[in-house]
Length: 253
Image (cartoon, rainbow, N blue to C red; front, top):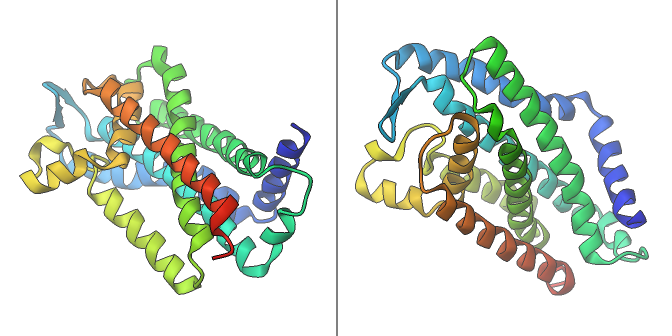
């Protein structure tokens, strides 16, 4: 446990060395909601028909904002892996008296706590400023969903961060993955109105499962959330396995 806490403390020191990091991790998602949410809420004044229920675009988009925030935190942490490997500090860590599982768990625990804090700030302001009707009895579900989804994306992205060598290739892959996954999902729009091929792609996208879990927890949207949760858990376990395997066998290739 001491080694896990040591890794968490290092992550804390890295984040607190720059106010820009803190601002990006904690407040940028709220700005997305306030700027894009309000603009599109006025544009789509009739609301969004979601599984037979009419909701405002702000209410619909809240889960998308939380989803992007979790993915962004995981992306930033994976980038930290890449930088540590690029400058050689990562290999020094591997000589410390801790297992590679402890190394991964320490990183993800800190960033899950950060994701929970960010989600709490966003949800609180969404309720107060935008008057989004939230399912307060499901906040425990939201908490668990934020932790699981942040962990899943961190493990998934870390496998690539530890294998890709060149900085330009890494940035290209991460940005491409971010935008493809984001726009081929239910973050910005309901799946019902999409063309058939895009709807099928979105339904197979883990970011859609992620978003629908959060939408169920925030506004109670009726969806096959149990199936999507199980699918994301499989994605999480597979990502953890491959991240740990990369740490053990793939980093020197």
